Image (cartoon, rainbow, N blue to C red; front, side, top):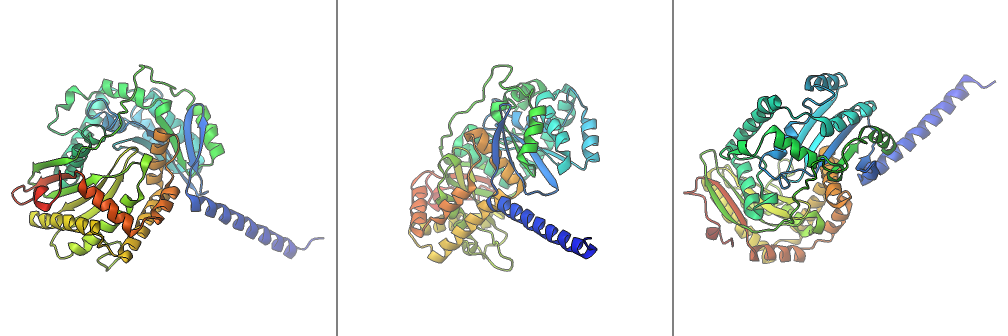
Length: 454
């Protein structure tokens, strides 16, 4: 007869072994952070699974503002998510999701509309069905447009009008790209959007945007087999082509550059930007140059290693940050300065000086090494976080057929040298800059005054 103590030891050993296997599985998934892709009933699907208790599931549609044929359609499409469908009322969707502890959200960007749900892992069937219903059976009613969508649009416009930094960045895209990526994220409050935006036009845009060739379903926290099972059941009736026969406007992006000045009493902001690179032709130097310019410290109690943080350390009330904004076929390397008008002017002058010093090869090897490390960390960290990685994977799939390879880009960043940074900065300064100025125009400088070509 086997003793109880022997059984206990055997059980403990089995438990330890199972835990080791589970830890190894989790480590493997976490180390790559990559999505496994497949095609289910004509729909592009991607998933990764760290075997946690929660899941985020999202439909990423190729329906951002660069693709909208009329202003406001992308925000209208995003705001109609989880409203009345042909099977469920918005109230029922809300109550059912709350009973399951779920979270529902929708958003839009320059390239995508994202409709997503976060929930407990075991509720994958319900939320897979719900997302399929949202993109294929939403009613787009007149009363919801006027009572909810239009109301939210007005609130967002008011927020944008009061945010000079966001306005300057939005204007910078228009200067740099004109149409497409240059389209505003929100129609201006002065735009007569009523003649472009209504529930019928949004429904027509949804017919094109939510067709299977233009969407991807991304899951973080679901096994590929389980996801494929429920996608095959609930997404089979999503149209394989627009019923209307329309197609998306997909013109290639072209960079123009130039300068725009907008008077505002809400504050002061300048965006100094240069043409970056898209995911279709990534230049790792731009990511490192953005980290080298910087402006914000990443270490508590320290001023930071970035050159703009050092150059503007004594400038009162000034906020500086540099972003490497990357899209499917283009990008912007943008320095944003906000604060009192005199401080913003000083910061803009220092930005031009720092860029010229980098182009002259004055950036130290140590600072470049720090910038390489930070650029690599930032990229891989974004790939690890749920919301950014889902949007990135989805955009990659709908634009190129596969998720963007962050690991490969990180390896390319490792190869960036001080010499390649010098060359990149010199090339940018020799070309046309994009300068967007919002605020007290009596004090804020023209691009020519700080030595930039526009």
